[in-house]
Length: 270
Image (tube, rainbow, N blue to C red):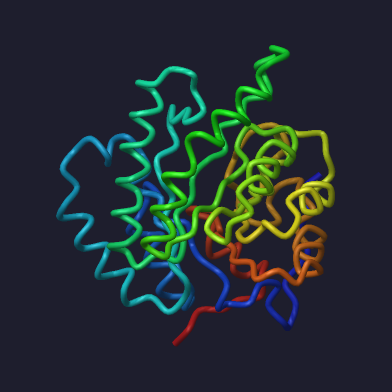
């Protein structure tokens, strides 16, 4: 049964820490960010159709729009088929090229971070898989962390198909770098894992820096508005607040963003 509720006098997320995810419906989503006086996580240029075609004019326009926003700015890197821990060197090289380009995009946007997926796949039931994932991750990421340090743009690693925070946490522990942190997608954790959200938050530890938030019906990545699905988001937000970590949040709710702002208790700015 869908959870609704929420919305109190005090916003559930401080406006200064909130962003609207800007993906394929970028005009609407950027307009929402402007209307509500929040930041934006630019995801548009992480999609293959915008990587492969000449999107220069769109990008230049978006840089200007983002520059006028009041809140934090983030950049979501490429995520389709970017298996950066692959044992195939050609696949790793494609990921390397795509990820370095994402840093260029992030820098031009004035982003506070660049985000990539962990790409851990629990469906692979091969005894050596976790070891291969970990060891190849340790080989791949140092160059990217060096790039992050050079540009002062931290990397955030997001759970996608992960059934546990452990694999990504182990990589973050190994680097122990302020430029390599974790992002928790609350809906992904619900869909792909049997763990309670409290276990995800605890399991991410002090590496957690960013949260993707939307609602779902429990089996698909629906990107519903907050309170429109089955997630107990009030509880999740309360647990995240208790960590006292300097978290930022991106609303991945598309056409449901206005309803999600009402849920959070955030109104439009004059």
